Image 1 (cartoon, one colour):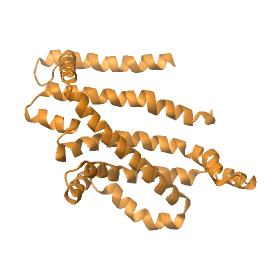
Image 2 (cartoon, one colour):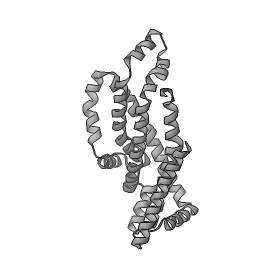
Image 3 (tube, rainbow, N blue to C red):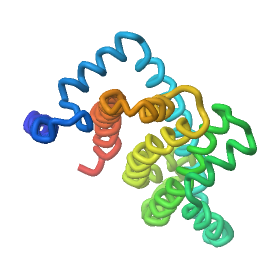
Image 4 (cartoon, rainbow, N blue to C red):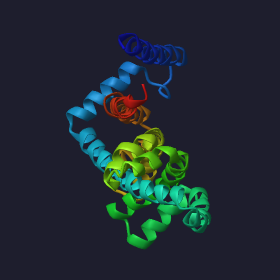
Length: 247
């Protein structure tokens, strides 16, 4: 386990080293050094500005993520288990997958106003179709023989769901969750840039107008750090725990 952490740490350190070398060679304000970005990050953190905007963005990410996962998982299971319903909703699913995120964001703002409700709804609507697709494939791949065994032993439906059905669905759920976070992070920033007065996306747009590349990279670094922490301390341990029965 330790050597895996060492490899990941060495990989990140290598990226920082390459960044430092390129910044020194370029010798331009267009690419500040890692130390300059860290200094800017410390300044924005000490002022309270970065923690505030980062917390606002994380709240939107969390609400949109859980909404998309809950709705998408339910629809995906239904479509995967019932062929007729899958046929009925397949056209709408394909449409949802191919509507550009920008269109959904603009429509939500026009319909519901420049509010957090519209922002979160726009993000969730962009993610739900991909959750549905992954979970639907997982529901289709569930072994019917195991379900037949559970039925033969007359297990309660809730027990069958928890002990037989969902464990076979966990890899698809985790893949959907990881993909969902990667997508939602990006869409939330676009949503904030287009129609909110706070959040990381709003701040990035503000610093873009001032051509403040150091502050842009400082906010990006903070955001990337949160993503790495979520992956390391939430997603990966959860994945290992849920799939422990396979080993």
